[in-house]
Length: 362
Ligand SMILES: *[C@@H]1O[C@H](CO)[C@@H](O)[C@H](O)[C@H]1NC(C)=O
Ligand SMILES: *[C@@H]1O[C@H](CO)[C@@H](O)[C@H](O)[C@H]1NC(C)=O
Ligand SMILES: *[C@@H]1O[C@H](CO)[C@@H](O)[C@H](O)[C@H]1NC(C)=O
Ligand SMILES: *[C@@H]1O[C@H](CO)[C@@H](O)[C@H](O)[C@H]1NC(C)=O
Ligand SMILES: *[C@@H]1O[C@H](CO)[C@@H](O)[C@H](O)[C@H]1NC(C)=O
Image (tube, rainbow, N blue to C red; front, side):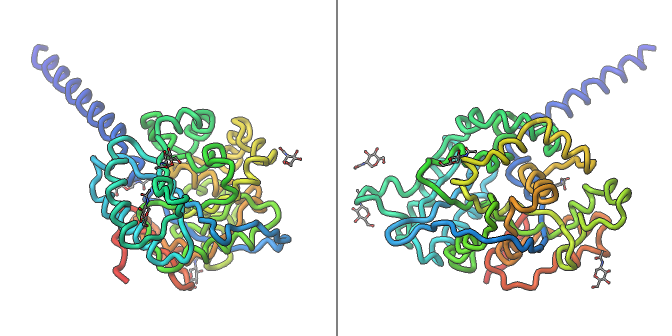
């Protein structure tokens, strides 16, 4: 009897330690910075044959708005090198001035300032504000943004998050969905990138994609290049054996979207009643139920569903602009079809080293 209670006490202690350890892991941002999100990848190409509108792109002395997230660097120092590669490749190849919008926390901001300062000196490509160079990089505090977007997070989190994180690591996960509320109104279009990316072409060519946006398109994304949504849509696909949802893009299916690169028509988003009505809890609940969809990849789960329900709201960008390298799903029971998903015959214009995959040196 005594022995039994000793064993029980020890087991309880072990469980408590495990729970504490788990909380520590999730609260320190690892979930956001390289697990769930980065395991993702994408693919798809469909054309919807809709009419095309012209978005006014920056010209002349204007600059292009680039957003990225740079947080929790202290606990993830390889991130520094990744961010450096991202910023340097972007600026070196860019033929236009860049206004950098960095979402960060206090500690990471110092690191970002140092890194960007050096890159700035060597490339000179940030926008210049009447000799006041301090505005070339704008920092945004992650805690403030998290509060601002709490409504979006509470609607999305139950369906597109695998485990509870801290309130702001969850906010980071869904931040792109409310960028139009954060970005200053003078920004009419913008692009957001994961920091584990590397440019091989001029970002100006990516912004040219805005000229191909359909008249209703709010976002631009490239296909997911893994079978992750084949997996997530398993039940739905069983009930609908002929569906293209979850099929590889390389053979005309819809493999979902990857959010490593996102283009935003901010003007349209700010004033879209369609988008507002979709972002309601009832709508998201209904959409996820319809497809038996339980995701874990944050914003890109939402974009993927949006592309199924309202394809006219998303412009599909060429897969070469988000060439994902993660092969995690290949070794998780999808070896036979993985190649169909990762296939992207276009020239690689941007590498995406998701799930910590090294990026080629070229
Ligand atoms: C993501 O990757 C991490 C580490 O590689 C792994 O532990 C985790 O289970 C993966 N999660 C998903 C949803 O694939
Ligand atoms: C802005 O940068 C230029 C070089 O690009 C430099 O000559 C100038 O002194 C800087 N101005 C300020 C206010 O820092
Ligand atoms: C530069 O601009 C920032 C905000 O745009 C302002 O706070 C700062 O005082 C300016 N600095 C100079 C030297 O003009
Ligand atoms: C969008 O903006 C236009 C012009 O500013 C305005 O007339 C229209 O009512 C707005 N629509 C919505 C849904 O806010
Ligand atoms: C994958 O590609 C092969 C060869 O093109 C094809 O025979 C097969 O049906 C494809 N599988 C899927 C799931 O698309």
